[in-house]
Length: 196
Length: 193
Image (cartoon, rainbow over all chains, first blue to last red; front, side, top):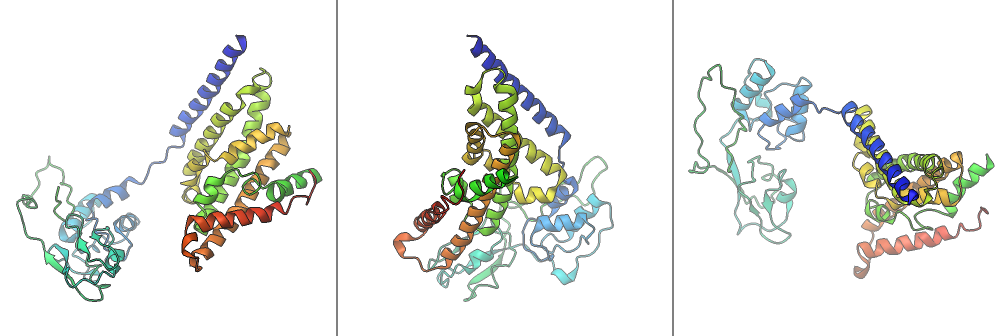
């Protein structure tokens, strides 16, 4: 009987000591991610289009935090630049034309009877918004498409159109007020209207 | 010195943990499809195995033996290993982000690697001393890394080879692992230990 108690005590002791050390380590070795990068990333439109010269929005956010110019995001356009300027406390500058111009928001549309099912656009899509399989026609998941144009170039039969998004009751948003009063904080603007 | 060298040769080649004792087969099949991940896994395993065999030896000798609680070895070793892995992960994450990027996802996986528990238990069974335990764990890890990297390189070539349809995928991987195991059985008798 004594062995039983001893076993329980020793195991409990071991567990408590380990738990205490781990708990201490969790505080002592706490790693805070770079909060500014996440904040910048929040403001970017998340098209992952790569027009800024970085592989995606997060790397560009990292680059901005490291001091790169804030005007290299065409999909975000002026609104994003303004929000970034507010966040970082710098002057808002015009969009860098070298990286593309701001266009109206579009989404990809595949003319399905012309699609030969080559899957090349599926591989190009950064957000997995194109559905299809080899030798089957493909289609675009409208809610996922960010309108980044990356699928146009690889398509061998040019059957993808970029259609402007029509404003529907679902995608219509209130216009942002031109001037924010002192107590309001800048709203999170993701550039593109969301469909939720 | 010769003793330690013998332990290394024995664990790496003769009694290879994966191919001769069949421990740690799950990561052997699981992360061997790409050479890069195999390298990361090998590094992480080497780290954890050496550390875990050391810690479990200390726990056994200084905590379980004095109280005649040897029967608790399995459960307490699991506790020790889980603790060591978690602690290492935290420290590495804080101190070396680069190393954490390489080892990061593999470290928690190794907690459940049976080779780690196997080394701890075999150390006790073989009545290895302090330094012997460390060498035994290190040798086991080197052996694991060796076959994992070799096997990953092989699988990368198999992926490009023209494999008959019935053998495609997991089947050819199993067969090549078996042949590799046969080859390692050939090391039996290399050294007597």
